[in-house]
Each structure stands twice: as structure tokens, then as C-alpha cells.
Amino acid sequence: MKRNSPLTAIFLISFLASAAVAVAQTNFSGTWKLDHAKSEASSVNTPKKMSMKIEQSGAQMSVWYWVTDNLGDHDWGSNYTLDGKANHNSWDGIEVKSSQEWDGESLVFNVERGTNTQYKEMWLLSADGKTLTVTRHTIFARSDLTETFVYNKQ
Image (cartoon, rainbow, N blue to C red; front, side, top):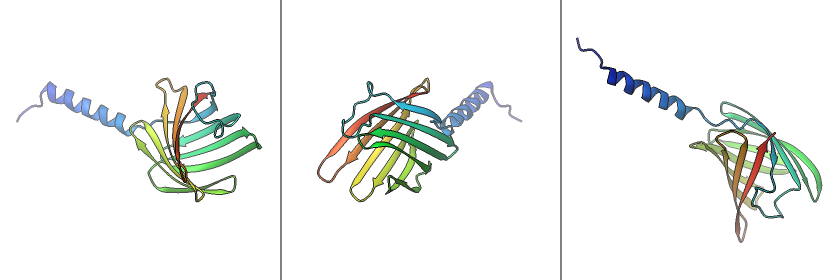
């Protein structure tokens, strides 16, 4: 009968630990406020004020948005699955189709808003969990635009 060596045990423990880390995904839960000074975005697309409340559990996420822009104050909520399946929400009366899936530690949103706007967002949480960076690439009918929105945890 052959015994397992200490090296085999160390390898197995390392493998199981790395597998556990790979399965654990970033959790974006919290209340976030837009930081204009750190964001690099078009003044047309950047509201005067914006905050989000994110609740995330497993493969489910709900986000409530509060926005103040040139048209006044708005708020709405959206629900997402984080498994690549299609989601249907409505923002300001416009149908929004999206899918969300993981790319390493980043969450990628593929979004179709109405019939004319498509964009892709990549959400990345800082190592200390205090900063959420959203990079958005929007495709318009005749152009495209990449912007970065930075949010601070409240």
C-alpha cells in the first residue's frame, strides 16, 4: 500500500484553495455615489448627481438608480442575472435588454437600450472595495464613445 507524500497533500490543498477563489465572484453590494472629479465622461452623458444602491446575492443583482440631470430628478430600479442570460428592464419608459457575465473579477454588461443605443459596460471593484469603476463603450448610429464613471462607496 502506497502512502501519499506531503508534496501531494500540499498540491491538493493549493488546488482546492485556488478553485475556491476562482468560484467566488466580486460582490458589488452597497450604496455608490458618482465621483465627477475621477470620472472621464461626456458632459452630455454625465448627470449632475448620480447614486446607485446595489444588492447582490449569488447570481442575482438588483440596482436602484437616483439621477439628477438637466431634466430633473429620476429614479428607477433594474434586476439582473449574472449568468449571461437575457434580462428585460425599463428605464424612463424605454425597454432595455441586457445580459451580464463575469470576465475574471469584472462584471460585463451587454446592453441594448431602445432601438438605437447599444453599449457594453465593464464593472471593476477596487482591491479595498471602496471604488467602483464602470467603463462604458457606447455604439451610436454613426459613432461610438468610451467613458469611465467612478463611484465611491458610501
